[in-house]
Length: 502
Image 1: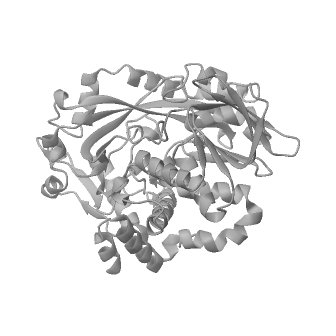
Image 2: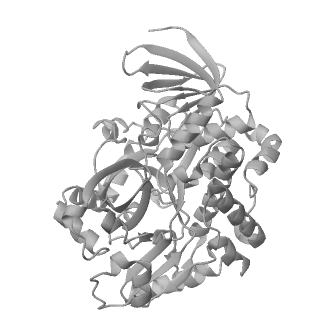
Image 3: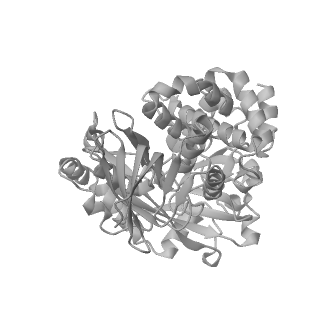
């Protein structure tokens, strides 16, 4: 063991999309800060950021029905959809800045245009979708959304899904052509290549075993080389814990009071994947349906066109599952070792509350391939088993905490937990995750560097023209952003043309 301690300004734990985004932002804001990254896997973006481990939707609320809900009076609440869409616009602006500045190249390696659609069946759901369409299409963020309940029109939009479908009940869909497929694994690797060229020191196969506060308020990290077992000591003024499912354990080791009483509930995901070119050619869209009753929100079924390794494929899922691991490449002891005296009652309360969810997840794990094919055939009636294979996706760790809703409440979303002095921050939670990475990392910057943010504002506005602005109230700015990001990222300008007529 080495007693030598190296000092640096910033340490990022985890080489996923979150650390990559925060590193890229900080390098633009303060180029002279020294940044180190420690990652336990052999390369960047191997866990939840990997293109095979996430939905890759480019979550913009264009098709995800769980981001909108019916109020008691029957009207549709689209506030969450607006928030998520604005956050995705922020991400697109930052990516465009990086491309325009020559910091990353070839945007088609990480973003492609794919229509986003919602599809429902049955009178109740069709009525909901129509109301949702009316509420959303009148908002400038969702201009260009189309609605149809005509089976012939649906055959044009989604031929694979309509082939051999019995038209026995009402059905409807919405479509917006400006949706995207984002390869977050590729983007993560591009960002770390850029950071490496800027002098950021990225070390792989390094496990952060411990984090302790130093007497001067900085942080001491014990970092172990996974291959050799050798240990190094590192000190930083600021630490970001962006280790996906592994973040909770590291937050607990930091000992900050803000991390007390928080637990985690792991949910695994599986997809069916089709790479048969004849089948893939019949579907070009991301189509979201409604989650089954009792299913967690992240289990909304969807049939997605994906662009991975310069090849088009189809993914259907996710099928939820349960494993005690907090990371895909984690340990079966992750869940039990996350239970501490400070979160024991919270975790016990969550266990009692979520017995039906746990039962549902275990049943999902036990599904045979044929049972999964039955679920797929609700989307693709003529799906053949030989065309589809099972793919194990990444782990998601949902936050458990005490809220106004009661003890041990399971949270579906992401949350930044930071120390009062801003010297350390951790990102917990899951969806919409990667798509909103830039907004989430801006929140980290605002929480942890409040003294500097004012001075950084001009640069932030250069990188993100809508910084600090509620976009839905600025239709002209929305037009401008759609047009400029479409040009830079190589996306179609159909949405821009639609917006100009609004």
